[in-house]
Image (cartoon, rainbow, N blue to C red):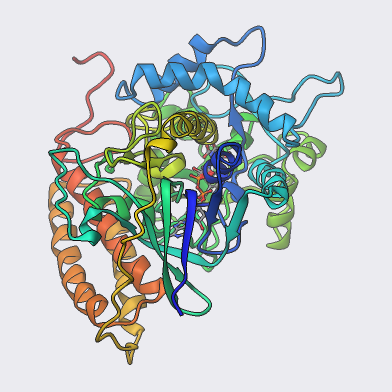
Length: 527
Ligand code: FAD
Ligand code: SIN
């Protein structure tokens, strides 16, 4: 049995980027939409705070532009920032037309939240479960669409390029083309290929490279690793964002997020012995940008030896806490913490990758016929640090641009039927799989201890040496073994870990999310 799918558009990923691209692409051709788990298992589904977009008289695109550039420490691409802040409001309207609800005030205006680094309240949200609401509405449209075929529990293994046809591939000559992807049916272990005119990667983040993460298990950096192996460009991987406030509950994975909107609502960070500390680090206190807050918490925890700090919301109106943050209220209540009368223990956790697959303003990668959008893409928006709630809006804008660009070019591409079947000759089922989980654990430990919030040249060197050993061992097993989702994910995590370490080593400064003790951060008044 070996089936081959043919489709105009292959879309890998069912978060906000993949779903919105699929809906737009389906107006022009057939779409096959892949998810390695159930449709709903995405980072998008867990998004709490909301989507940043200008909508009030007191706010302007220029203010949103300034906040984004400032959070990104000047490394963002100004043209991309301009595009995102000016097009975000139109795409929020499109979501509303597609059936997404956002909270409103009694007078009918939108209830806009504020988060760290934003000079205005501009976050559209649905209580503290915005992502789930977006995903609900989009999935319901996707399921009704006659031109979209959904394949759940289907794992994209590798992109198909000329390499698989025995033709020459040369990144410098810019001649690489993507003809689809090899995929694994997770339930049957059957490997097949999907041939497409255009492929969109919307595979999300990398949080599972770290011991503590807010990301669900799907976030293993697969799209970034696939592009790297296909000789595509990947950039800015040193900028891994740690969310300052995940719920301290060591036995839980992923870590439950305590939205930044709670600090926007007035909650305050304090040490375990009750000292407010954020004003020692930034005049904005608990509302400082994320890189500063996460590093400050890390520093305070190392100084005191405590396992967490506290987020205090007890001084706020109890009813408003229950109304705006029902998800967090109920979660903490289930752990016997009443957040209207008790502080919440919080710690930083790996949350978001600012870098990824390099794309231009149309979402085009350097591989022809291949696009990327959402968290796996590096668009130039975030620079050295992402501004809160700028990720969902970025995904909307780049999925939109990519759908327009792809529609203009799709008729130039033909399906390459001569792609060979996946070669499983000589592989066997591995007798033991313990090395896979053990190597994953080792990666999480070394990334957390050596490539985390605070780095040094020595730590990065050690991380690279360890990663090399894990790489050699895994490649040996990969070549001999019948493929499984786990071994493919392990291989992807090794590729992504390597890219993060190498990017961190080559940046000889501390800036934004990349903090290396060997290169002290420049003060604001230094050149
Ligand atoms: P995802 O939503 O992560 O979807 C990835 C998809 O790719 C999944 O369907 C997965 O199955 C699929 N996939 C991956 N690899 C493969 C493979 N090999 N084969 C097949 N399928 C594959 N951002 C904001 O702007 N505002 C917020 O309020 C906010 N809150 C957040 C809260 C949490 C807890 C987290 C974790 C993130 C939050 N973020 C927020 C970030 C934001 O949610 C994500 O960056 C965004 O949702 C990513 O969307 P995406 O479409 O790129 O990928
Ligand atoms: C949050 O709600 O704090 C997460 C927002 C984000 O990651 O953009």
